[in-house]
Length: 451
Image (tube, rainbow, N blue to C red; front, side, top):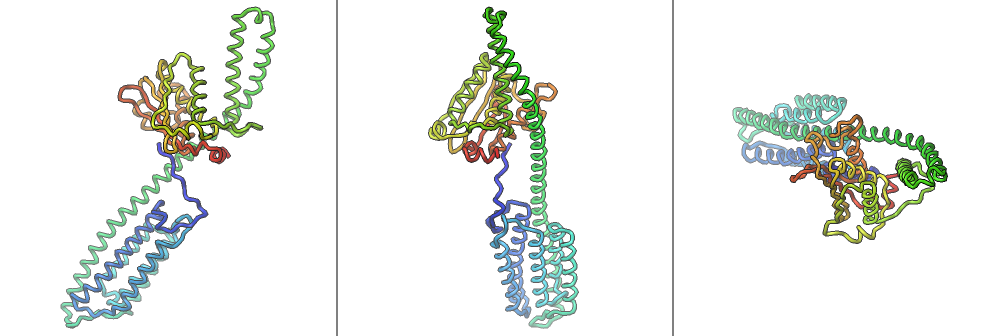
């Protein structure tokens, strides 16, 4: 699972060139700019070739002035500052309107509606039908039809130095062939790339909808957990008082076995109260709590010690890999994140259920990132579960309501800017890799995530 990339701040301005085609609209605008560059060089080459090869008498200064205007339009379109680099429907509409105007001007100087390249209007209208909103497309259709109608009456006729009508007709046929080939090649090339951009946009929207659904699921579970934690607070306190009273009764005070059982019950009760407090803390409902600062090494040492205490029958092989960033691992302060602690407990508990005798935890800290690798000697993940890693209710345990563990792990790590990956080891067993930036655990960033 990949974490979502950080979006650009919306209050900053970027040119289309700076944005590097991050969105479908930006990519489509870049395609229009590329098409305009092709038109600039193609039109210039056609004018020069027709003048030299076929002795056409063309008004070169105004025609090259129009081509120069297209060059300036392209440079302006690429470098103009935009809010977060975004390209709107109006931007594309204006660009296509100017393209049609430039084509009309060039056709006016080269035969008007009798010029075979008049069918290049169809290319621009086809692109408009795909890229623009419906009203914008119809506006361009009306404008192109008006330009075509004007060119049937107002234009500068083409003239050959030899004034041979047969040669002029032959040139018209050649022009129709070239125009047809250009239309076909450009339509196939650019429409294919535009459709690919739109498919990528649809895929991103589908991912965003999926993430929204998952986050809504998490919110509902969080509300349920928070409500349950509130409800459990009173009976847990009552049980603590009762256990305290029982310690002073002769039936328990004078019998060491029963007193030991009371101590074990009290320890488990304190654990339940700690879990409830952790739920309320994660929900932001704890009051008067000081922020707990530690280091990566201290956080992991405490977590491993606590997990070993709760699972004394399981060997936890805890190791730190080299090379190690000693300063970031042992000295840089981080917030003792309750959600991350619960995530690691969840992964270790899942590994212990699959492999009761042995669980491995490897830690890597380098280049500003913390990597955790949890291994076991169990049967591994089913193929269908790996294919849907992080989706709710994907479990091999076969119990109703199970399968939320990895779902929560993936979403918590994603909130922290990290990634989760799972696989089956070649030698047997399962491997879960977690990686997150250490900056996500710093004091300032932790407040941002929690606030």
